[in-house]
Length: 303
Image (cartoon, rainbow, N blue to C red; front, side, top):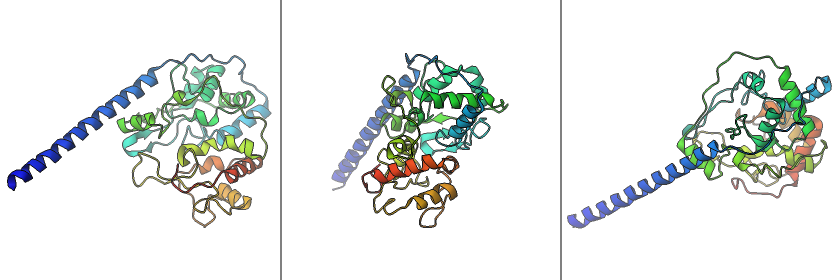
């Protein structure tokens, strides 16, 4: 009997070791694929039609977009002064901090800044990490001009960049398309859909809704973000399902965006980009609400 138990124990140990080796090989392979992809130089030309404007109305439009729909001038991104946002630890995935854009932007031409926003491609032709270009590249050239023009008005701030580390699990999750860290790889550079003029419709709201997909998932039904720690905030269901926003009125939605208070009276989690959402204008809010209400109901967690 003891001999059989030893054999069983040895067999189990062998299986565990084989699985561990297999997982290790898989993780190394995926991590290497991530690194190779990040080293790729993209043949995407720098646009020549994006040139900064000094028109106050254009600059004001750029400021509005940077603080709301593009969300680059928020605390979780580059900060209100563009000197870098707060550091966000994401457990085994890594640690993220948006860099000091006030020092970086002067090293880019107007066209290179526009390419960065639309294609997720840095000055050296390689992919940017984590920057959600895929969420904002629908903006027309006039909006890119506006954002670039506003950035050019911002003073430089002498502040070092915070930590930005993508760990092995983060690289693996990126390759599994669970978390978009390698940005340029996900963009169809020769076929980017551009939005029309802002209007309070679901069609325009669909573009605005991209800013929600990074956390709430492709289907916007929420659920735990793959790979994040157990204590990480869990995004809620934004579809008109019983577990989501079924029965919501525009006033309920407007209150959520302007006060940070949900329909049930509970405040939004601090991880939610309330800072940007609160600065959407009426057209944008109506458009986003129309889009979310037009979605098919999806049960919570089917990201």
